[in-house]
Image (tube, helix red, strand yellow):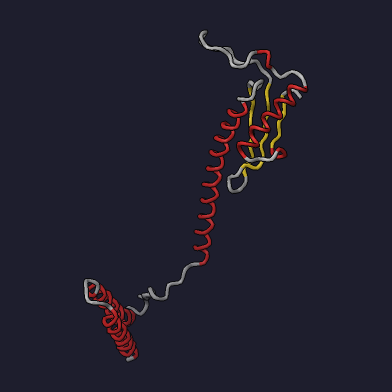
Length: 194
């Protein structure tokens, strides 16, 4: 008897809810879909207690309206999302670091007397340039491959003494500070063999 009372109670609740929805909804193409959904709820409310009576050892529970998320699963999903976000940032920072190192090396090579150098940069968490390290290497300028081309800087402009090193260092600092908005304290310049 309690099963029958539960069925009647559920059906009455759904019918009252359906009648309010019919009143609130405007005339149009949405009403047939709402009626279909209400019919499904009535079918579930009738079948759920009947099936639990017929198959008492098995549970047929429909808990769509009582959805409870698994906390462990949501924490796992959140951790996976954070790991994926960190991997994307790291790969973007690695690509950005590589491009910026090449760009900075190309700009520093424009300074007279610099033939070869290596750059290493440190990026912040947001991908901003925080520290720059430049190693100016000794070497002769490359000889032109075509006889018709000429060298812009002659071989006599190699970095030999401390005065030339200081001039080259000042020129590189001025160039990079102006282009990248860095402070002179953020840029380290060393000369190979010094």
